[in-house]
Image (cartoon, rainbow, N blue to C red; front, side, top):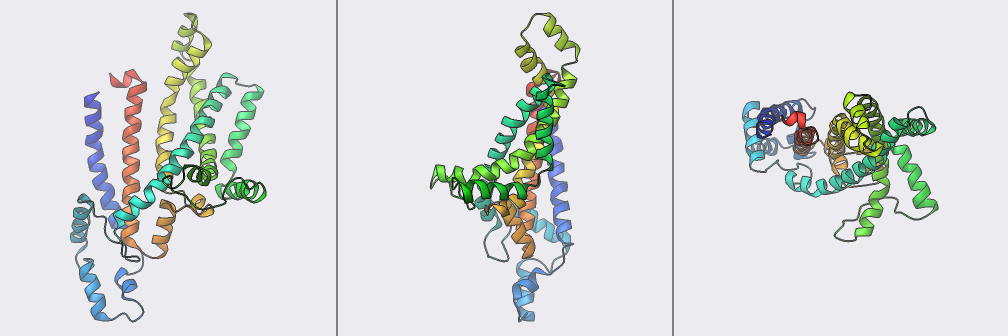
Length: 313
């Protein structure tokens, strides 16, 4: 197990280095000049020269990359050109909001999607299977922004049960925090639950036809033990991979959902930074997002080994 972890860590380090180089290089291809944007309408040549020197824009590309990486290793992701705040502070401010929304959305997806996939596989060809597939197809084909608007009209405008938009910190009010995240979490979790259901059903159908499942039944084990211990445990591999990817995608910022419900998370931060050509913020957020993806894939590998003894061997 230790060698397995060390191998994965050995792959992780060069991957992070390559991703950082790619992010920095692609950022330079974006149109516009940050120094001209900062100089204002007058664009005094001396001011532009000062800004280029301050932000190392007059240095060669490799030198600027070294400056940037050196700051990242110290926890300095640069400074926002638009609002003159450290990018690390902005990330730490927005990350908890998106992280909480992501966890709630994944909870909704797991609670709905995996049990529905198990039932659809066990009851294959019955009304339960057909109903689960219909619901999954509806979840996959429903746009998040449209579903969000419908939920706002129903639960906020007509019933008045939940706030239509905004975000309340859990330190201020726990119920206020949950009430602002219930609808966006369901909107995001609904689509992921449909994908979970399809993958769980497919994997369960394949596993339930295997020899070790027939052997477990021949031993006289109950159907519940056969399904949950021998079937589901071996079918979770592709579901874990999917979960890691979906979790990383949500952490990178559910832009449309956050815009519909006016949630100040990663999605809104990235959109504002792109429109304002705030390159330092874009670089910092994309680097954090890529790092999340890499760490989540490492966590998925470790979960594989935890549920499948053959991988540990």
